[in-house]
Amino acid sequence: MDNGRKRKLVQAAAALLMNGNLPGFFQGRIYQGGLKKFCAPGLNCYSCPGALGACPIGSLQALAANPRTLVSFYVCGFLLITGVLTGRFLCGFLCPFGLAQDLLYKIPLKKWRRKRVFRWLAWGKYIALAVFVAGVPAGLALAGEISVPVFCKYICPAGTLGAGIPLAMANESIRGALGWLFAWKLAVLALVILLSMKLFRPFCRFLCPLGALLSLFNRVSLLRIKTDGARCDSCGKCRNACRVEAPHPDHRECVRCGACAAGCPKRAMRWSIKQDRQKQ
Image (cartoon, rainbow, N blue to C red):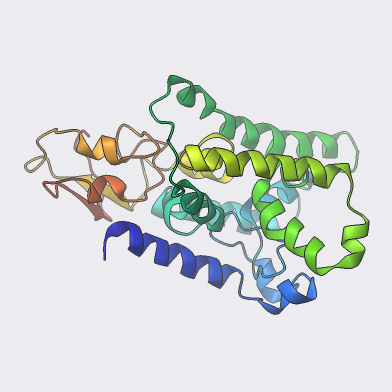
């Protein structure tokens, strides 16, 4: 079994584990048991009927809105430990919305690659993290206003796909209350879906605040993709295999999917838990 299929199996298993409350999809109800105190290892909406855990980005917005809450220590610790241990490995192997984009990219259409504008658009996820996840909720709280999870409420397409649509389909009362906000979020989701057919993981690359946060740890995380300088002949096939166009595996744009290692004909790249001090 090749690397791509193995990764898809891991992604599918992770999505099922994070959304194990299957009766919720038929009942149109959100699981609110004890597991909801813990963050899921990926962008998985708290309000998804099947979700067993909390979304890290939703938890961050709650922290920004009320920085004195006791959950702050857990949320910050979870994200810090996850980043230090794995970097963006969660993006490549565990995130359910990443899996959805991967499947859409398999649709046989002409793809967009190697566009200079993509490098500029990649800063969008850091803006989303700083402004919509942290800045606006914190600003509203400091101003004495009622703070809202801005990113989740007005932007997040993963929430629309995993929570908004299933809840509306299963719950008649929710369908009757839908308005312009739901229509707006459907439009955002539709745009991401269309882009995902032409471009590998547009949401992860340009808008995901969780990816932005974890990307800051790629250069220092314990889990790495190491290059064996003795085997590498600088053929460039690893870069051609990289669909997020990262120049090397420690770059912030690398989602740790392993496509570079799988595409190396010399098998000069491998997963490692030791830091690679060698120049990439």
